[in-house]
Image (cartoon, rainbow, N blue to C red; front, top):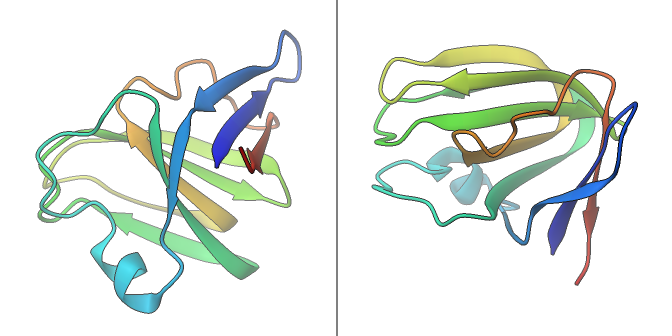
Length: 117
């Protein structure tokens, strides 16, 4: 699976070539905790059945992350969170975690699409 970014203005691009999904409750709870590095072009996707406020915490996460909250394919918020101390919340039905810097240029109102490869 890959993640495509469709900005409000500009050219579409691939944001992540490798997308892992956290579909089980355990995978969602674990997220990216205890990982010491992330490969370039990687994203972890949390897909939910409905939109509601979704929390992200960085406890036991050793690397900075770009986190994107998406509702019905439209970006609601993009935030860079620091290891151990970051915490944020926003409404979403899709939550994406990427290596810090990977979401540069992604803004609220842009569209993101998970595509099968």
